[in-house]
Length: 268
Image 1 (cartoon, helix red, strand yellow):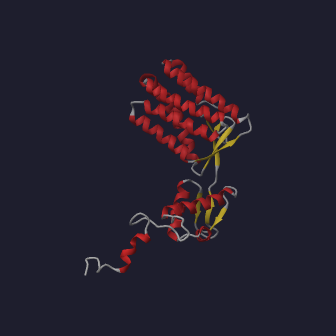
Image 2: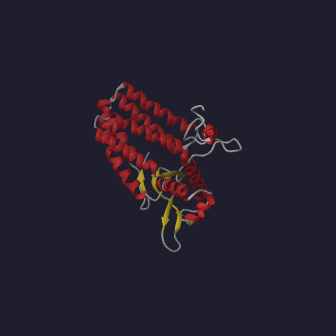
Image 3: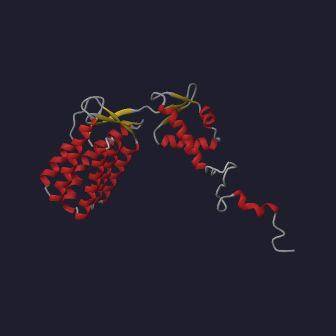
């Protein structure tokens, strides 16, 4: 009898149950790869997100069981999908009669010239983060004036190029993201680790709770973005020249905007 004759019959077919080794799901009968648990949760989250996008903010989406059935996933998978949705600020859960899952209330709180950032239910936190961010900007500009190397300036210009491309593409979301990356790069120049870390955490908070960029009513959005691009380009030029007066004037202009009683004034 060979050493392998005592192995259970199914052991010889282990390779047919997995793809490429233990722990990896094999293909479905139709040849398509099987989804992982995280993939199923992400798929359920996308299905609920589609539903959210089809209804007004604050709408009741249904009970957890109704939505789980809609997504055709297990209880555990739907709970993970719900965790993802809550982390993204897309849903709120209300207990009791008439409760269930609701699309998050979106509050356009942060003004961008003629546009606003549509925020999730954490809008008040974002408004506070914007105020603190604006207060820290002059400190980071002072540090950049003293400590920016030629390589640092070249990196800042790369972010300006990304902003220029977003203007050419008429893509306000890409512009906002490139703008945040520029400010994060300026913060990274500072030798003050605490200051830089606090600033980047504030940027992460603002970005994490921003759902979209919405058009406003004042002037064409592309004209506003082009104006902000020119301001940021001039700011990087001032840092390159070590022109403290000009750099501080520009960052003051950057953070100054009229604010209504319903919106938190903020600039890109």
